[in-house]
Length: 207
Image (cartoon, rainbow, N blue to C red; front, side, top):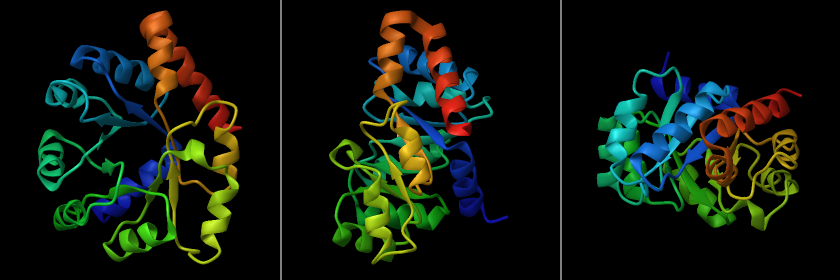
């Protein structure tokens, strides 16, 4: 099977992507492992995390689909691929990232907010677009976009929580990205709280 297509299928099957933004590598590892134990199958480790390579190394034996987030340039994208990332996410669209990802058959999910940005990303070979920050929109935005651009597939991230994630999935989101909820759970209840919250997200996604 085409590697890129296989990764995109796994993302869609996962429904929930845990966006891991740790204050340290160890915190990011604990957040990721808690999310995985709670049933989340896709992990996006952000490049704002200190010593991010250590996080990828610690997770390489997991069964989760590992990706890299907050990738701002092509050099960082290549570093992420060499560290084991199977998909690349950025808060904006950057054509040079698209080029290097296409070169190696890695899905690139750029952050887009306007129709113009979405068309540019589609022309650069991006199959799934990240709507970020999604809390500026409601779920009906996907249907609005799919009017003129019926083939656009969107993953909303930013402001997604247990109460609204189902709305986005039912509106046609490929998957949803969650993050701040996991950090809050970790700060208040540690590893077990992350596991419990992740289980709640997965139960909600299966309803």
